[in-house]
Image 1 (cartoon, rainbow, N blue to C red):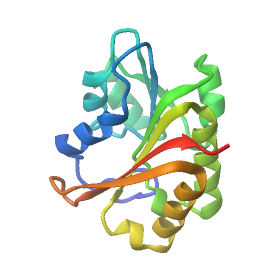
Image 2 (cartoon, rainbow, N blue to C red; image 1 turned 45 degrees about the horizontal axis):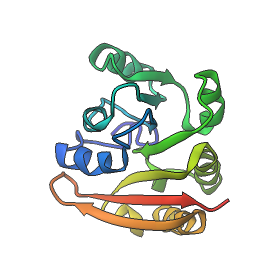
Image 3 (cartoon, one colour; image 1 turned 90 degrees about the vertical axis):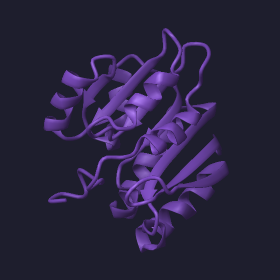
Length: 183
């Protein structure tokens, strides 16, 4: 709560949210899934349960304290200490050229317009042509200026933008599920 631009969630995310988010995770092959802002790892468990053997699950986390927490409590997660704004460079350093899913719980509605555009552009460049991007926001945040701008940007960036609300969370979560980046 002291720094909402770094930690966007004042309460732990529910298992119901993690299960909904994990629906974009491929269950076959050797997919690469990137989680932007895994925080304490509330979503990571749902993602991990769905991933097939040989898959990569990479978490990009800005907070050094949360990086340490994730490395201790989620040893199967490839934790990268860095900023989502440097996504392509961080993936390159990890030897990743494209990803099958980007799952984001960073506070999009609080980001400046140029930061939203920059991170979203990098996420779409990293995705395979049939990749999925999903972002979470609190229900109501999509009605703020930053939230409305983010929703419009998603519609300009993807061929398909679906929304889903998970009520079994406090506060309720709005999911954006986006497919087929327009390039």
